[in-house]
Amino acid sequence: MRFVPLIPSSFDPSPWLLLGPVMLRWDGALHEGWRPSVRLGLAIHAVHLPGEAPVEEALEVLRHGLGVDFLVIPVRRPENREAGFRLLGQLEPLLEATSGRGTKLALRLEAGAEAAVLDLLRQAHGEAVGFCWHPGIQDAELLADRLWCGVCEPETDLHPLQVLGYRWDMALVAEDPDLFRIQAALLEAAHPPVLFPAEMPTMALGRPVLPDDSVVFGRHLVSDDQRDHS
Image (cartoon, rainbow, N blue to C red):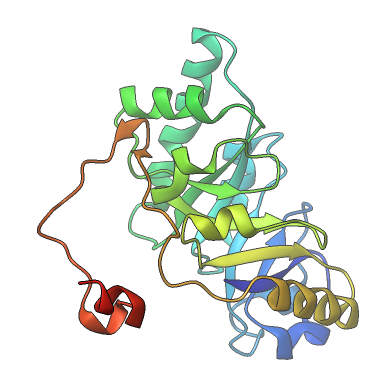
């Protein structure tokens, strides 16, 4: 996985130009240097919203035309049907606003909300919505095939996530470039890249995964010991 800095949107991007790509933490203001016309090709892969007014926040971010891959929205566990309908009511205009822009919605779920939100999205046919992993996620396997990004802390153990084969961007909250370099280097050393899950998932989005006997690994992916016993 690739570790990227998660920077307040009001920060000057100049000190981060050599560390791109980045993610932004929306704090209600956007430094002029982040605008596409002046940021010198520095890619912004995601904007993490505070979530107090997700529709308004997301529309404001989209208005700036930053070309982000993901809008990350914090989501609490829907405690009742009314809360569930309210969440779906927020997602609907956001899906319409991001349609055709190349930007997807990634939900940062409250700890323990995985099953409830997945069930809600399944009922609403919300397959276009994905998820942002964080250390509070209790059952990452439920979300494994729609984990599009993640955020961690310097001491986070990411081995359980690597077991699932996750290898995409992992944001690290950052305010100082030099400190970020040190923290990212330590995380990279502790979590080398993975190509395949250690174990294939048995469940995906609440449904059992059925084995496909027609899919086999090529010989170049089989160890010498396995060849000797084949």
